[in-house]
Image (cartoon, rainbow, N blue to C red):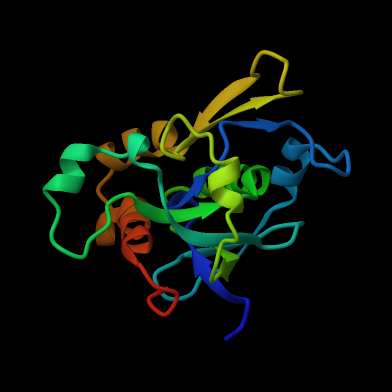
Length: 188
């Protein structure tokens, strides 16, 4: 079995593992500059656009959030075999932020990005996971000690647009929900 597999996934269907990100990458490049360098390629399948980023594909894995972050009512009322706390997560939080910003800019077109699906986590996600928003939002700051420049949550940008627009195939949100519900690599 390979260590990873390349797939297309909506950036909105992937969650952050950390509460904060810095405004620069390790190499000193600005996150904002990277967002500007993301190009839109021709879509395929359920996607209208494939985002082409100036950085390597993000690595994602299917992971179950710690119980304190889950909606306990949803967990107790779900069908047998369904794990409502299980979603696609990444440790590449700055790159995910860039892809989500580019996908918002492309709305109402449904976007995907090339990702690397990891088959196993050696415990890194649990050690690094500190999200207070179940992975939906992230704070952006120059350093971890600084006051955040902004708080990012794609839902605040897209949901008002989705509610007010009439789009085919349930629009962007329908694609996000479909990708999130794909529990296996083969389903992606």
